[in-house]
Amino acid sequence: MPRDPSHYSASDCLFNGMCFSSQSSFLGRFRHFVDIIDPRTLFISETRLKECVALLDHFKHGTLPPGTTDQQLWEAQKVKQAIIHPDTGQKIFMPFRMSGTDTFYYCVLLSVLQWLNQSHNACVNYANRNATKPTPTSRFIQGYLGAVTSAVSIAVGLNVLIEKSRTFNPATRLIIQRFVPFPAVASANICNVALMRHNELSEGIDVLDSNGNVVGSSRIAAKHALMETAFTRVVLPLPIFVLPPIIMAFLEKRPLLQAHRWLMLPVHSLVCLAVFGLSLPLAISLFPQMSEIQASHLEPEIAMATDCKVLTYNKGL
Figure 1 (cartoon, rainbow, N blue to C red):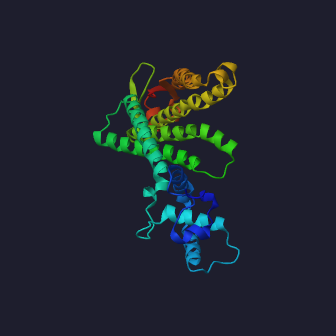
Figure 2 (figure 1 turned 45 degrees about the vertical axis):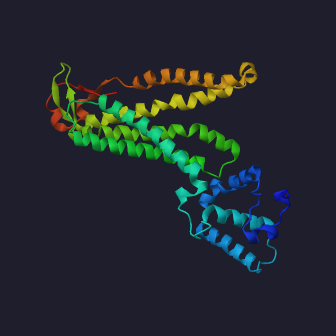
Figure 3 (figure 1 turned 60 degrees about the vertical axis):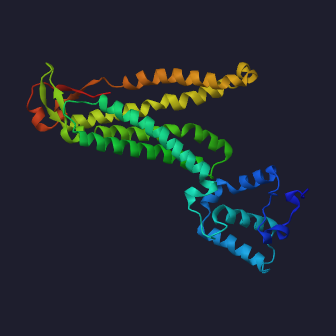
């Protein structure tokens, strides 16, 4: 039976390219690969990598600097094995390193989920837009691609940034991870609305007098409509992402859930469902669909075309 790997010294093993954990057992290989896939090695700088390689070269040639510890040698070996291909001696492209597998799989999975979510949002925004002016198919496609790409990039980027941040203590990190989806989704939703309905900003939307007659086409009214709609998209995810963590933090301390931990998931699902049922009508009720605006606030030609002081326009939902 091999000795416990923890009993090996660097001088016993590193010269022959061995690892801290014995590879002759499943547990040893497991410990080794847990070390190798450490995502922190993705952020090793070029300078640090060169230092590790140089330290291992010094070891092999018996020219180690005085005071070098086994721990430093093991760390250098870990960094090298995680980044350098053992056959070619070349750096492995970051997304294809074993240490990057979980991280980039997470990014891909999150991207797919966000793509589906933002694709749905884009279609909702388009279907419920102000449609007083026709939107060419080419502009719809451009808007869709821009909306989904920017929204997914924002949502994924913020989540990955927080996921990989090393500057927070565990308690702060947990709180941020619970609440960061809100600004991520809110920002993505704003981009989605703006890009899916950008045609309204360039073409304007119809404004109506008190009799329902079209007075003119206003870009200013279109800007107000998009700002109001975008604001509802900021408010919409707020209860969904803020309330469930607060409610669950309270419920998790109750005796029932303390005694029956298996209830956590169904209770959390019910809480999310209830909050979502509340947040949608709450958000879209912030502004009337047929919003009002002072005629004097619109383009001069529109203000002069009617005696009505207040005009209306379809904000969209």
